[in-house]
Length: 353
Image (cartoon, helix red, strand yellow):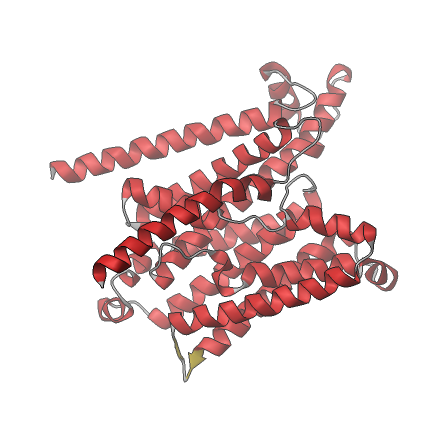
């Protein structure tokens, strides 16, 4: 009993610390930049909303509401969503090295976005839809189609296999990478610059119209995944155990794949390809609080949102007034961490053999 109370107390402390960290990250993300904004100015600007600001605060109002707040919301939604999707994928495949890109969703969404970038002139001349809606829509649809193909390949007579789904994801990743390479070869110089910036990941171009499309999808799918926290604990023990406990394993697996796809596709659509959030964050939280998904999922979302917001803040400050792509910073952190995970996994496999 005392052990259980101690564990719960540690979880509450961790949740409070992550919430405080996230609050500080939000404040510094809004206040820091080429234009420094103090606490009083920030409070006045945020409290004024979209209404006409005071004359002396017009510049601060524009910077906060049109530049910094959209990219902050983008960082929070993408970071929390990718961490949650990665945590669920790791439980589904029962592998701490799994991440949302495992089944090809990220690559599929990237292909859709690259397609729109390369053929943007043709779309603009033939469609009346605003151009900023085309890229997120194409990325989401392409990622969804990729996920459906993976599920269809891995399903036979109503039964799906996680290992087969993994292999299908590897194949879809290869196909999407080949398609992206062909489109890159066909792109001109201006499109290549856009492709390079977008493929490295960034929240600098986040706008309110794009967020209005993507963020509700991320939030709704995150709520659905959080509802599966008990089933995810059961899946860690094996599909047969979860089935005997009373969980509809087939339905749960399909729901996890679908909603993780929606999250990843929407995130790629508004921020480009950002790696390692879905891999590093759940593993860090798991090392601290254990494998219970009732605590693991919300804590991963808090840390994911904080980490991506910190990365965005660092990207703006390190080489100011220029800006580093977030994907580069995340790769610098996530790459070595992934190698450490591989080495630990290798030791476990050698010990088991």
